[in-house]
Length: 87
Image 1 (cartoon, rainbow, N blue to C red):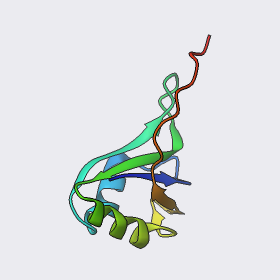
Image 2: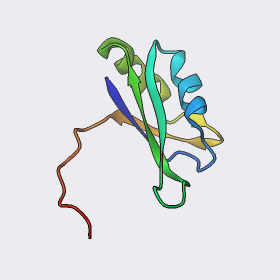
Image 3: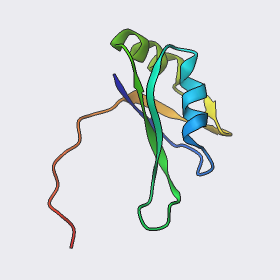
Image 4: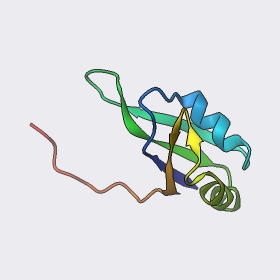
């Protein structure tokens, strides 16, 4: 299950995400989304859990908890919408 983590601290790292979600099960991937030009964190990230059951536990358990000093919003990630290329 792919999980969206919003309201992340700009200082949060991939490892912070991984550690916060490992208590709920096996984390397949954890990444903070960064601006392509500046490399600065954009305030959200994604965590992929090995099973839907672990994902559901993680969403319920991690929502409104603190990661890197900031309370986060956690929910199931929606599929990415196709957008026209930017020019």
